[in-house]
Structures are given as structure tokens and as C-alpha cells.
Amino acid sequence: MSAFLPPGQALPPPPAPPPTGAVSMRSVSRWYGDVVAVNDISYEFQPGITGLLGPNGAGKSTLLHMMSGMLKPSAGELYVRGEAAWNNPAMFRHVGLVPERESVYPFLTAYEYALASARLHGMDDAERAAQDAIDMVELNDAMHRKMGGYSKGMRQRAKIAAALVHRPDVLVLDEPFNGTDPRQRLHLAEMLKRLGDSGRTIVFSSHILEDVEGLADVVAVIIGGRLAASGDFRKIRRLMTDRPHSFTIRSSDNRAVAAALVARPEVAGLTFVTDGFGEAMVVQTSDYGDFTEAIAPVLVRTGVELHELRPADDSLENVFSYLVNG
Image 1 (tube, rainbow, N blue to C red):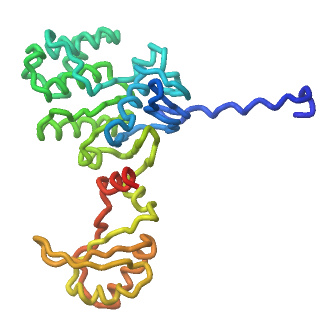
Image 2 (image 1 turned 120 degrees about the horizontal axis):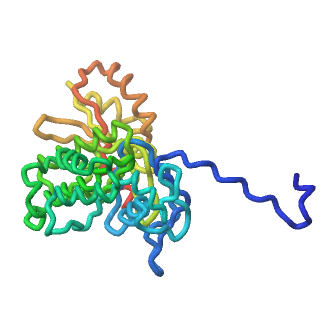
Image 3 (image 1 turned 60 degrees about the horizontal axis):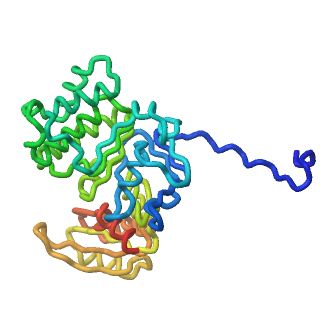
């Protein structure tokens, strides 16, 4: 085909493939003057729950505001349900945003706040939609009190109700558990899990690792405005081949197991620890795959009774620490 082009003219670039996620990001960046908040991120957010992790100032809030159509990318393309997120008011019908900032009107009740959101979205039965959203966040007892007298956790639930009132396909939440007590936190987590299981796309940020670990199907780690890792955090940890992996072993004879393991090339170290469950052995290995393949034959040969075998550092906290500090 190039033989028919005028001299010096190159073939046009091939068309970009269509978006495959509910939220699609292609080389998205956002900067404020000389400060780069989000740097060249490409990602497809699928239905289910994605937890967004990163240290303060990593770019999480900027990313969430671009996803919700509230902030224009400085470069790149961002789509929601296959449509441009920026300068596209029709897109708001499909997105609900819960910002981190205290963005409620103190002179309104929670019901009035949810009702105003329902009317702005053009809901056919705005009153019913507002009541359903209040029910979802369990704010019925205080729904007719002005929000100026609410606790932080109650204001947070009112914000979530207003974001849910139009039944969005994509829900974007910036630190949604701020100010909530343990019971409220558990209820909100269960509600978000149900919404994710129903096929909605939920993206939330949290600085509390336990919230992300217990709720998210997928974790995306943002560091310095870049996407450092994404996926199941346990799989991310196992791919960190430059870091030693640790396993905790409890058996009927930890010393015999240690003697069998110490000469193996993939074993980098052995230590014994004592806790409320008795003595355990922590094994450091330089090769996750080789160790997991070798441990069963070793235990069989030693003839011990295995009580526990688990990764000692296979937690979201360790993954996050490794990524941020490494």
C-alpha cells in the first residue's frame, strides 16, 4: 500500500483499539504547573471492586476526579463506558463520585441532599430514589436532621447516599470510610461488596490497608503519579523475585524440618520465634516457586506432623511497603 503514497508520506497510525473496561485510561497524565500529579497511566478498570493505594500525594485523588469527569486530563484519553469522561454531561448518569472533602450543605437534611441529587439526575421518582439511597447507607434515624449537626461518619454516609441515588454503573469513592465507626465500616464494606458482585465497577482509595485487603478484588498501587503494580496483591508479592519471601512453619518437630531445609539452595535463612501459639520457624527463601515445590517432599521425608504452613509476608501491607520503599 505504501507504494501508492506520495513520496515522503508515511502510513497513518493504526486506529486505537476500542476501550475494554468500564473505565479506560490511555496514557493519562495530569499536571499542575511544574508538578506532575498523574504520569502516563494506562489501565482498564473492570466490573468489581478495585482498591487504589498509594502514599499521600501519590495522585490518587487526581486520578479519581479525572475518572468521574470532574477534572480534565492534561494528556491522554479517559473513557467511561466507551465515552469520553471530560466535557460529556451525559456520562454523569453512569458515574457516582464520593469526594474526600467535606462536600455537604449543613443547612440540608440527608434526605433533602439525596433528593436534590436524584432530581438533578432526572430520576422519574426522585422521592423513592432518595429514600432507597438513605436506606442503603442506614441513615434513616437521622435523615430529617440537618447535616450541620452530623458526625463525620454520618456526613460520609450522606455523601455516599447522594452518589448512589441514580444507581450508577461506576462508583468512585475517595477515602469512603473516613470518620466511620467499626459497625458503619462493616456495613459500608458489605454494601459495596454487594454492588460489586452485581456487576458495578467500584474504585475506591483508602489509606487503611485492612480495608483494601478485605474488600478489593484488584489492587492498583500508585506511587509518584505512576502505576507501580496492579492485580491480586498476593500475585504481585510472588512476582517480586528480587525480594526474599518468608514462610511460617509449625510442626511436631521444627528442628528436624530446619535440619532438612538448611542445606537447600533456595533457603536463605531460618529463625525460630515463640508466640501465643508456641514455637514456630520462619524460613526465608530466595525462590518462591522452588521452595513451594520442595517443602512437601521435605516434610514427608522428615516424617513430622505439619500444623501450619503459610506465607509470613504475603500481606497487602508488605506489598505496599516493598513497592513504596523499593
